[in-house]
Image 1 (cartoon, rainbow, N blue to C red):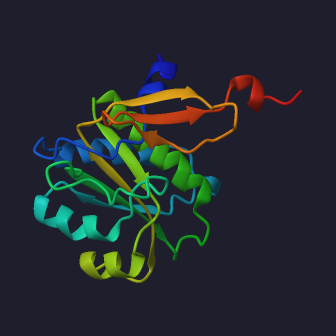
Image 2: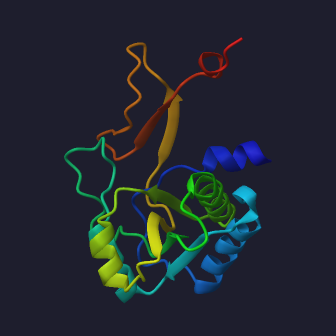
Length: 189
């Protein structure tokens, strides 16, 4: 059921790093993005795939993790993603990527969830440094990095507290809590 898949699709930030993700799996996930709708059908998104530990090591240092968790610098060695999909915008095809990017990223993450993988969309990127590390041609704008792997953490959804705080947090056992607004709060009649 789609609702179950969406509910399981959380932002995972810790992984079993030793569990590899095959390149073919990454290609299957990008194929889901390829089949997704595109504004004016321009299809301006391109992808860099990484499931190689050496290439992953080039990507990881240029990413920022979990802005609300101020005392956490990101996953430690052994808990880092075992794969990445870097999403690029081809500026020779378009200068606007917002709709395509969101649809493609969600398609990739739903596909990953269906394959018992987890992921996290990361937009806080040192783009110039990542461009250099991966030799990304200037015509491509670095838009988003999707970190992927076998999740090593439990993520639970809970109601937003009475004070309205929507910040996610980790408890003392490492369980990641994500407050979500109620459906009645979202629907305006």
